[in-house]
Image (cartoon, rainbow, N blue to C red):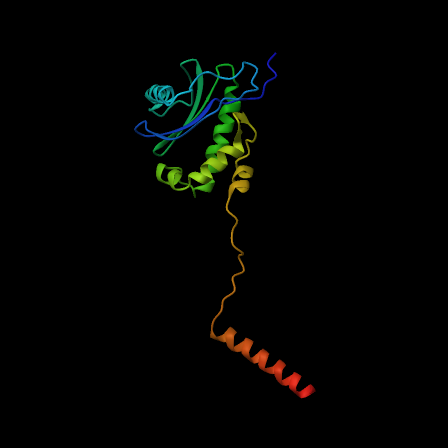
Length: 185
């Protein structure tokens, strides 16, 4: 009986030509199968990503078994987002986590999950990822909650408009108060 948490070995974003936009590999130390010895070097990572892209570049699928890894992926305009996990992980949980992350990113990037938006808002993308995955373990699958924790605080919506009328009104108020004070003396 497997009592481990749902874990992910990597999160990868590739563009439409197979180039890496973002990649984060996890090596949890407390996993029941021990620390992973895969994807330790950049060369291994790039080779895996290249082969993975060749298998998934055409839209149509969303889950494959590639090189004894479970790959759950989603196409979005000019990007492909991946969660990579071991072959025994739950595909539905991985798919749910990827969908919630994608939805949160779409909300954060104003409905356009594309390469340029991801690169310009890399801080928000990484924060969304960290809210969804912690050291390879899925911690949240609610896209609205993820986006709300990551979103930048909005300035106060009640804006103070200063124009000549408000300045004159303030001047009149000060003038009246001064006259009242002088009359009391």
